[in-house]
Image 1 (cartoon, rainbow, N blue to C red):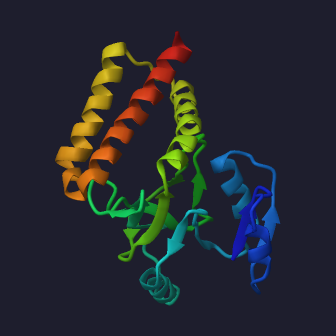
Image 2 (image 1 turned 60 degrees about the horizontal axis):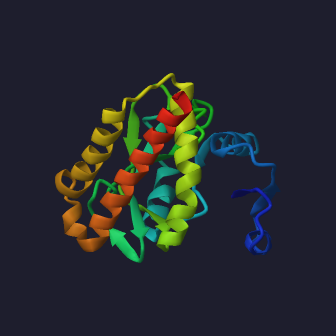
Image 3 (image 1 turned 180 degrees about the vertical axis):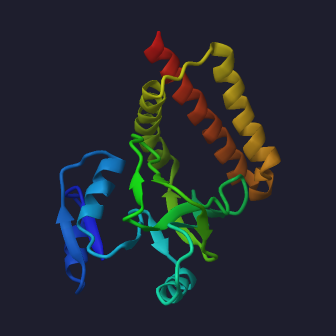
Length: 219
């Protein structure tokens, strides 16, 4: 197990170093993708399971990974379903579950993309699928959500600029409206109760802000 940490100010380093077999590496922050790519240079074996600080491997997923180690992989990358804990509730719909993410991979056959936020794996071939979920403790409260909000929307707008994207004023409004309809109606967010409504509104605002920042930067 390798922990890559940007010299956090809580007890992360102290706790990690108390466990035998954990390699702790304190690094300079080089963006989400760049820092993870550096972490891969520290790994001696080929197969890696990547997990973020706000995520947890469930007991069932742990057992599945142990069995995987005894198998012959058929794909370079495997995804897992991810279950999000948002404002004190597990989200079961809204397009967030199963919300598959690619986390188990052969590092000799993949690389991280250069996205400033929401980094992902680049590879050739088909994706394999694991069955059991990864827990994601995404936002414990609204203050935490909006602390990330401004940073993430700016990084996402920068990614759009890098990719040469443009947007019209009407496009901004329509994209935000569509996200709300998609999450709350099409993806059954209403079954998540008021949490589903809040999530759809917040996500719509995220898209609105991201593309408005793109419009601002282009202007």
